[in-house]
Image (cartoon, rainbow, N blue to C red; front, side):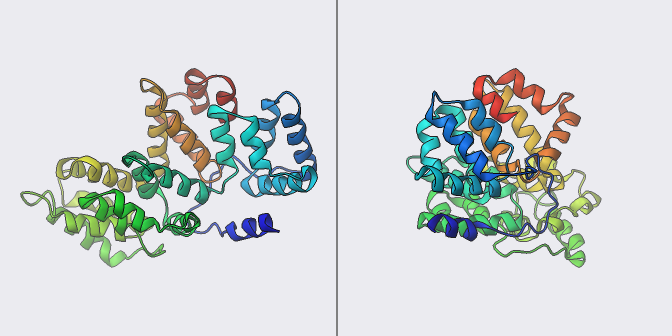
Length: 320
């Protein structure tokens, strides 16, 4: 019953942004049959390929049904069994897939601020790229750690960077205030390029408090400034705040941002496996199909081909 309650508690409506998933519900789905396949794959000499074939081709909701069936059949927890059977990169991906998108994001955020030091790159990627609906769900799920997201972020960041992260669209909204679009664009210009120095407070206020659809209408900014938004951000602010603003500005094409992150992560010296895993796992039921399309348009080859060139073994298989 505890498992059922957990599952029902994590169901949420996908409202707002359209979805472009690569993982869709499997047809003729039979959770009992899948659970039996997983148990056989774990019980004998571990059959990683079967685990990959089953769990990467099912949605999160279907994976949870498999987990319920597995618990009834094997009298043990499937996630614990998978932990014992798998290791390394494959384990990270499979266990990530056993979480809802919000659970996974919350876990990544928690990991980025727990212990010594703070992984600002992870905080920026998740908190600045998620939609209003996703942020609200992440905040709700984060409470399962017996922590408040805002308090943890405040405790591990500082200055204008902290102010921005804490201000990010606290209220769920998809409103486009057409009367304010021109006003906001002019205010950003007046608070930045037009003056010596930067009125950071104004930039934080507008970039964090407006809805994603509202930010997507900021083409008007170019009618005031000789620079576009990205060029202005690079000129006006530095460090983590600059990186955060650039991600927020990516809402005009969020999927292109993720495509560039994936390319940079895989082609950098010592491929940033954690970044690749996080984007693939967190976006596979959201917009990974569109990310793949943007990747091909931007880099001239498919994301799948790049994965084949820069990864190997079971990790490559589970990503593909």
